[in-house]
Structures are given as structure tokens and as C-alpha cells.
Amino acid sequence: MPADVVPDDLWDRVAPLLPPAPERRHRHPGRLRVPDRTALAGVLFVLRTGVAWRDVPAKAVDCSGVTAWRRLRDWTEAGVWPRLHAALLTELRSADLLDLDDCSVDGSHVRALKRGDHVGPSPVDRGRPGSKHHLIVDRHGTPIAVTLTGGNRHDVTQLLPLLDAVPPIRGARGRPRRKPRCLYADRGYDFDRHRRLLWKRGIKPVIARRGIAHGSGLGKVRWVDERAFAWLHQFKRLRTRYERRADLHQGLLDLAFSLICLRRLRTSF
Image 1 (cartoon, rainbow, N blue to C red):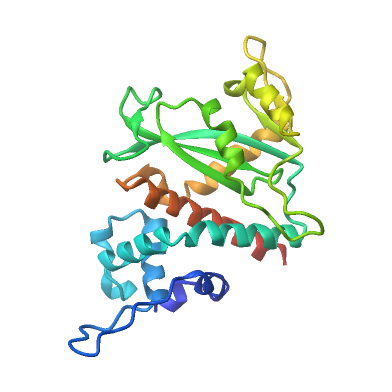
Image 2 (spheres, rainbow, N blue to C red):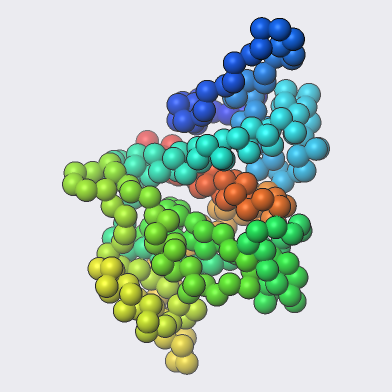
């Protein structure tokens, strides 16, 4: 049953964020609306398996792929996924499982099979169309924010937009946290202008220098970025970008990060 695909702890957090269902017409009401929990099961099936929406097994999920896609579209436009991610980050901080003092950033290329927004020639894939995921994680590798750009965008161009994308994270006494104290990055971010901008925001930049021998020691801290991307790519739908609409791909990214945060909450108790 779809209710078994969507765990109770996930559904309890998603349900309050969903927009209300439209009222049925009294005359010619048509078919019954697929329950939201069943539609979410269809979305999760596509996210985890990577199958095309038209290939979703309706008999197994009790929901057609078209219905799941439409519900994903509606929920994405309603802003459900960023709010879910922010709520889980707050829970992690409340449980003392989120370390925002030391964060790190990195980017990862994915091939884009369809044209659309935030698609560009990828310099690491012989100029084929691609996109780029820019990610900021805490000291444990918990994803905090992600931005999507074309595959030809330089990592450093998304450094400040990525910091701006960090939601206000509550869960502890005082003001919500929106920035780290220290930010680690590789040589792709080695620009003095951006170092000055980070200092201006009250963030200490720890960025590897270009043109010097490897062995800066930042790998002891920054390996959590690679692990976060490995967690992300466990969701097969995100290994390659299939969605033409950038907002739907971004919504799937936020949903995947919410699942990663929820998994961390489960394993801590």
C-alpha cells in the first residue's frame, strides 16, 4: 500500500504544509481525487528509482505518474519543499545534531537530457547540456541549502547566492542562525574579492590557494561535501536532470535533502 511507502514520521511533517485540496463540484464531480499521501508515494517512487513519470506502476503505487507529477508541480509552486527542509533543520538543531559553526561548499555537475532553465554546456562533459548543484553543508555533511545553475557557471558565482539561500534555522535560544562562522572551500573559490565579501558578512573564509602544492589539510574537513553528494545521488532521479522545469528539479532536490535530514534524526535516537 502507498501508506507503507510514505513513513508516518515523514507524512506527519509533510501533511500540515500541503495546500488544501480543491472542493469537488456538486454536479458532475468526476473521479475521486487521489489522496495526497498516495500521490506523495508516487513522487518518492520516481525520486528513488529514477523511472520516467509515464512508467510509474499505477497498480503498485495506486497512483499514475501523471497524477504524481501534477501534485509535485502544485506542491512545488506552493513552496512545500523548502518549508519542509527548514523545519527538519530546526529539529536537527534542537536535538543538537546540527553544527553551523563550520560549513563547507562545493558544486557537482549533472547531465541534463532536456533543454530548460539553468541548463548550459558542461565544461567537464565535452560541452553537452548540463546543470550544476551548488551545495552548502554543516560539519557533519547535513545539507543546509542548494542552488541550481547551468553547467557552465563557475562555482564562485554561486557562493553568495548559496549563503543567501540558507533558511533561518531555529531550534536554539537566541536568533535563528542563517550563516556559519567559518566557511571551507576548495581552489575554485580562491578569489580575494569573495574572501573580502565573506569577512564583511562576519564569516571567516578558509579557502585553498591556487598554484600551490596539494596538501592544505582542508580535506580533513571538506570530505563531508563529497559524502553529501553521494547521499544525494542515491536518489536516482537526481543523478541526471530529466525535468525541463528548473523549479521541479529544485523541488526534488529539497525533498531529497529533507529525507536525508529525517534519516539523520531517525539514527540519532
